[in-house]
Image 1 (cartoon, rainbow, N blue to C red):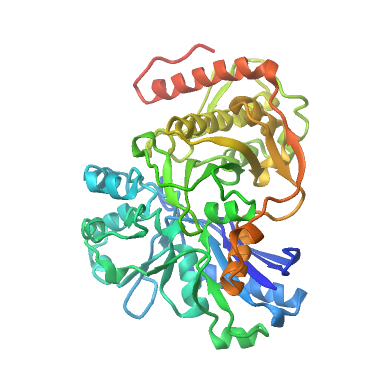
Image 2 (cartoon, one colour):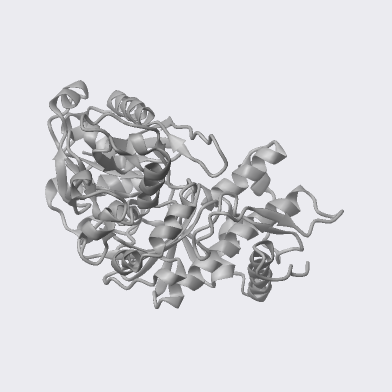
Length: 484
């Protein structure tokens, strides 16, 4: 058996699979985010450990873990977990969707070495500008920083006692030379750090360490290897078999991701497309990132005083976008704008705008954001031949069909089951423990249904997307407000 642990923003999930990749057990522990100020987003790493302990105990209660041969890790990217020389946590982790470091990011991005070596814009949510912010605003604390770990790698430290990162997660720090797959001394120096503050690097399918004997005994296991694992999106790609050129997935989770695999490093930082290492050797990927996807419909559900599933359940057949227009920039946006300051907008309301109309507008707004990412990715030459849909939002047929129509691509929905970060992590654990190859492990799951574009509505979605793009220009002062 093999375990996959996925540290998400809202919870930590663990699964156990057998050597036929059947899920035998799963457990989840919730997590909360602290938002002390506008644009801030933090978590206490001690909560991750408590959640992991709860999940592992839950798995142990369901199955005998003595047959486990390996563990893989997945987690939300970019978080700054700061440790002193005794591995004590110095402050709450600054998360991926925290935008306080926008000024520091802009300063670093003005240094051409960052885009040249990382292949990416220095986004405010990346790790390096967060350390620059700490140096500027918490200098006494910064002076105590001995190690900087990404969130899942703090779990690894607890599990193994090792300071290790892997390529896909490290690529989102703005310190990695993404083409060379190694830390850049020059980029580290630009934020007042050096290589000693960084964890050792491995590939996601390699062994990063072994489970500490005390934890192994507690859970009825042996000291099994722990794989490098992957950042949440790279691990999810391994989970759904998106590991070859032309393969892609669209994720409707808290954030939104359009992810395409590549066998070469071909960055285009100016497009705000993320170009990162994949969780597998000699493989890279590109992705467009939307900061609020499921988060947007959950926000509207909270305002409406109901559940998101109830809002989307009775929308009927897909229809052309209406007059109401929603910009889903609740906490800024990455692709294609790299704009931490912009905020969401709900515009062109009238007396006929009811709850369903606003629900459709919210779903359409996120759909338009995916179209932005699609245009950015394909504009770099990335080819998308096959698109798989994952994440909680894919339970809404209306939303999936809107995305299929906007992108002009069928969206394949896997059979019921976990094919996300936890499953991908377990697959990476299997590969690290057994030496099994990519073709044998990272296969595409069985597809339950294919959601086709509504060809008759494609022009309507294209026109609505043009209005959406114009609206961004209007609210940021670079264009006129589009008509309803």
